[in-house]
Amino acid sequence: MATRRQRPCLVCGTLTRNPSRCDAHQQQWQQQQDRTRGSAHQRGYTQAWRTTAAAAVRQHKAEHGDWCPGWQVPAHASSDLTGDHITPKAHGGTDDPGNIQVLCRGCNARKHAR
Image 1 (cartoon, helix red, strand yellow):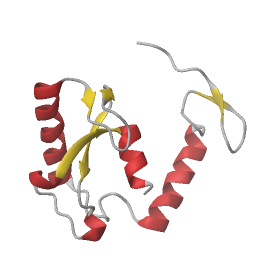
Image 2: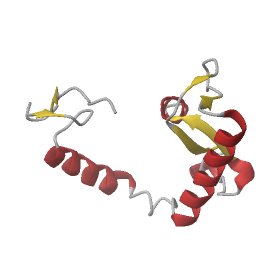
Image 3: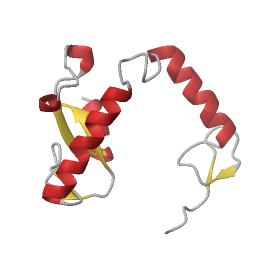
Image 4: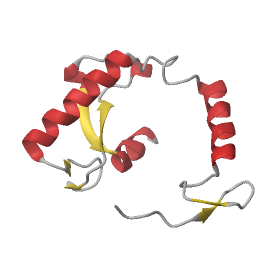
């Protein structure tokens, strides 16, 4: 397993292996995010969603391996696959398996930003 390179925390500059903030500042940032938009559970991402999404990812990997179909980019290899709502819950989407697609985290973030 490759070790992550240390990076400075965006807030205090302390070196951390986290992507952007030291543990203390990441926790503060997450608490602020939860206050602003609600926690994942408050937004409807319950254990039932996590179970359904995990099943979709398992099925996708069994059929296609570690391959992201891409979202506004060509399909590409990725071992970091996630379940994603086709129609977002905020727009009336459900946790029905027919409303779940599998994308890598990068494509999922790209789709969310639009």
